[in-house]
Image (cartoon, rainbow, N blue to C red; front, side):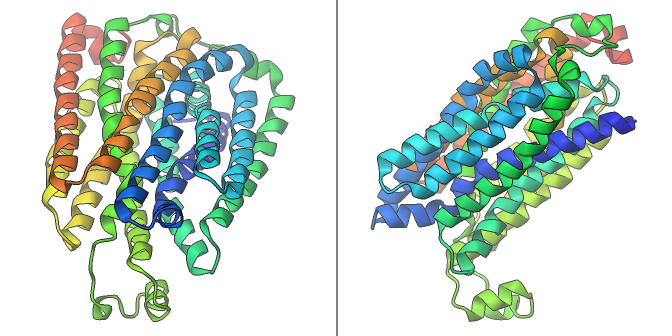
Length: 421
C-alpha cells in the first residue's frame, strides 16, 4: 500500500499526466476542423494533420532524452513546472497561428515542452515507491493519463457545439496548464531539498542494479507499440466518425439528443465515440495496476501484446458500429500495457539514472514510434493501416516472449521474489 505522502505525490503528478495527454489528444480532437480550414479536399487536409501530429510527436519523443538528463540535474518538480508553463504558452501560439508554417512551429515547440513530463513524472513516482507497490502507483498514474486522453475529444466537442472554434479550445487548455503549473512552482520552491535527490533516501541496494539487455529489448518493444499508439490516437475520432446510428437509437440520450436537434455533424459523433473508447482505457490501466506483480511483469506484458493483435485486425475490417466495439476492446487491452511497461523500466535500470532511462524509452516510443501518425495520415487503405498496426503488436509480443524467457532463466529464485536480476 502507498503511504499518505506517497499517495499525495502520485495524485499530484498524475494530474500533470492527465494534462500532457490532453495536450497530446487536442490535435486529433480538432484535426478535422484544422484540415478543413486549410484545405478543401479531405486527402490533402488529412496529410496536413498527419504531418502536424508527427511534428508534435517527434519532439515529444526525442525531447524526452534531453529532458531525462535535465530532470536528473534539476529535479522533477521544477521540470514539471517548466513543462506546464511551456505547453500553456505554446497552446496560445497555436490559437494565434494563421499559416501552416506557424502551426508547425507551435506544434513542434509544444511537443518539446510536453516531452519533459514522462521522464520527470515517472522518475518521481518510481523514487517514491517500491517494487511491490509500484504497479499500483503506476496504475493510478495511468488512469489519470487515460482520463486525459479520453476527455480531450469530449471537451473539444463541447467547445465546438457551444459556438467556439478550435483556436479557443487551445486557449482553454493553456489556462488549465498555467493554473496547474503554479502548484508545481510552489512545490519546487518549498521542497527543493527533497526534489534535487536523484535516488530515494531509503533506496534498496538492488535497485541500483542494471539489466541493460532487457532494457534495450524493452524499449524496442516500446518503439513498436509507440508506432501503434501514434497511428491509432492521431486519427481515432476520424476513424469513428463513419459510424452511422439512427436517430431512434440515440433519442433520449441527453446531450446526444440535443446535438441531433442542433444538426451536429458526424465529426462530433466521432469525438464522442472516441471519448467512450479512450475512457475504456482507464479500466485497462486500473486492471493492470491492480493485478501487476513484480514476479510476473514480463509474462503479463507479453500476454497484453498478443491480446491486442486480433482487435487491431478487427479494426482493419470493421464497418459502422463494429468499429466502436473493436476500438473499445483494443483500448481496454492496449492501455493495460503502460503500468506494466513502466514498472519494467524501473526494474531494469539503476535508480540514479532512472530519469535518463525513461527519457530514452520515450524517445524510442514517442519519437521513432511517432512515425505511426505519418503512416496513417498518408495511408488510404483501412485494411493496410490497421493490418500493419496488428503486425507491429505481433512483433512486440515476440520481443515480450524473449524478455519473459530471458529473465526467467537468469535467476528463477530472484524472479519469484520480485527482485531485479
